[in-house]
Image (tube, rainbow, N blue to C red; front, side, top):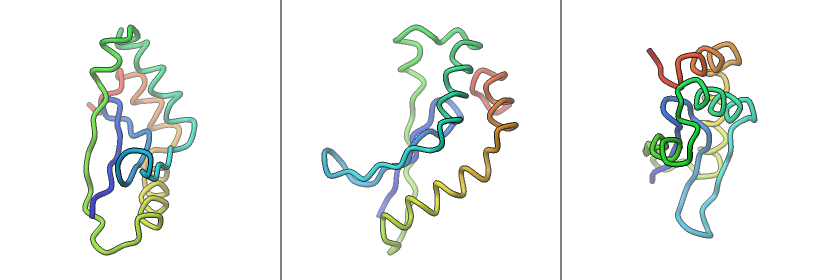
Length: 98
């Protein structure tokens, strides 16, 4: 089974499992979207088209783990890996991990 991490450039923002209306979604903490907004302004990608072009998805194999458990586990790991200081640096770099 796969879980999807949704990124704006190199900033993760949300996890999802499944498709359509039955999809389970787990947004990350608000500080992630704050970083995306700042990065978009810094990079000049604030208009709709350039902003939307930068979204990407990454699938992760969760094996036999229950999707709800995997969503929470991976969300917790990402929130630990991206403290406020790291997100601020990403925002200053226009959302890119340099």
